[in-house]
Amino acid sequence: MGASKSESFSISHNEMATFFKALSHPARVAIVDYLLSAESCICGDIVNELPLAQPTVSQHLKELKNANIIKGTIEGTAICYCINPEIIHRIEHYFGSISKQLKNKCC
Image (cartoon, rainbow, N blue to C red):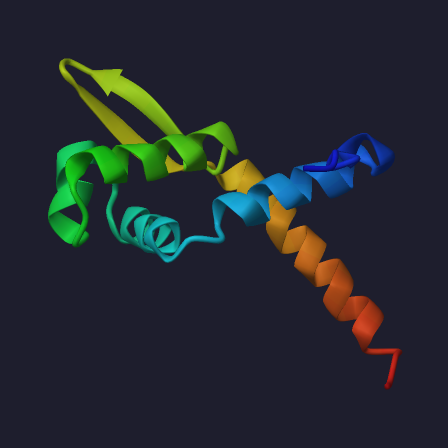
């Protein structure tokens, strides 16, 4: 298998790719949607919302957390997860920039 050559791209390109990779699974998108609809939640709540086993949900949460899309704080024996608004704003800015550039382009 060849090298990804990610070092050949800007920090911004690599960061966006990390965000998009973390959001590239429907279970992770469903987790983000669930977190948006709740004030906060613990892993057990998310497991009850998805048709996945607890270890699978935990792995998806780990991927989202590694990409900084969600934050987790320990509360007793549970972890409370929430959306990281800073990252969502960065993604929004990225797509807003694309949208502005597309207004002046045609195929």
